[in-house]
Amino acid sequence: MAWFEELDSRQQIAVAVVVPVVIVLLYGLVVLGPRLRATAAMQDEIVAMEAERERKTIEAAKVAGREQEVAALDRELARALSRLPDQKEIEDLLSTVSSLGMDSGLEILVFRQQPETYQEFYAEVPVEMQVRGGYHQVAVFLDRVGHLDRIVNVGNLALYEPKIIDDSTVLTASSTVTTFRFLSDGERRKLVEQKKIKGEQR
Image (cartoon, rainbow, N blue to C red; front, side, top):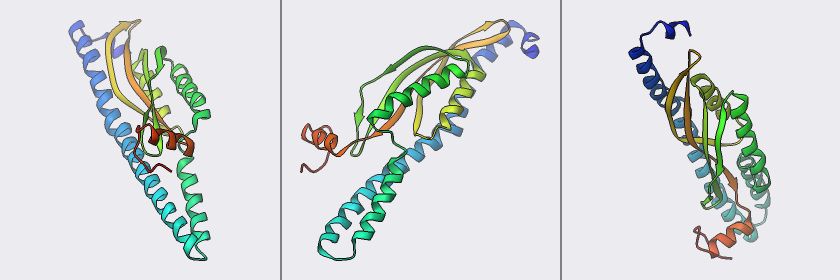
């Protein structure tokens, strides 16, 4: 970063302050916004398919020949839900996210799973994450997370404490990394009974 060394101290501080803001804005526009929209669309799709499947199942009991339609809906629903890990896969997925941070050259300061929150068919699994590294390493990590097969959103991204170390700017980044997991029928019934989610008790 020869260009950085040529700047006076005031300009270096300005760069250290402005660049994190630019990175956060670009991440929000280019990565986070589309990911959030895709997540919302997938959630709506799953809810719609569940409702349609239930309707077709009821009709199938009354009208012969509807079994194939129900089977087709089952396959579509399975494909949509394949992007949501189940309970057994969550630990591996979170380990993958942590490894992506280290592989991107970041020092992992905090990686702490938070309590889940529940929606009708899925649970949100948030993880508090704090890392330290350069702008480039943070950008690489965000890009790699954005290309995971599973849905993983990075929210509440904040970059702070920039410092010049060996002619490079190093900073701390904190965020909430959220993935989602599918709720089994048993979990859903239990959560409905506990009034943690809405739904019909069966």
